[in-house]
Length: 108
Image 1 (cartoon, one colour):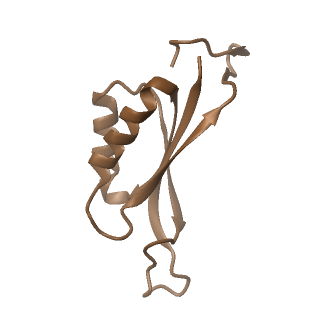
Image 2 (cartoon, helix red, strand yellow):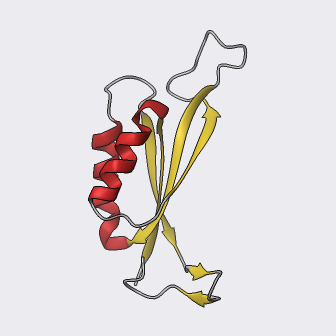
């Protein structure tokens, strides 16, 4: 089975909605962190222009990646500069540290 890693960076205001929507579609695990940076939108009132955003990372089966992307886009969309960005990356292998075994199809 092929796996993907979905990484999304979006407004912190949307964080709770994104989390809730992902749980509703059955995503069993993800990691969220605060990140700083700038791209399409920069905070020109700050000396370094940096903006704080949320970043979520999800490892998933390839067949579920598009649904996860659609869900994040729907939940995080405000329609303004700085709404964020999503990347989908291939994953060669996944391992569970606890069991020291490769993750098998259907386990995530």
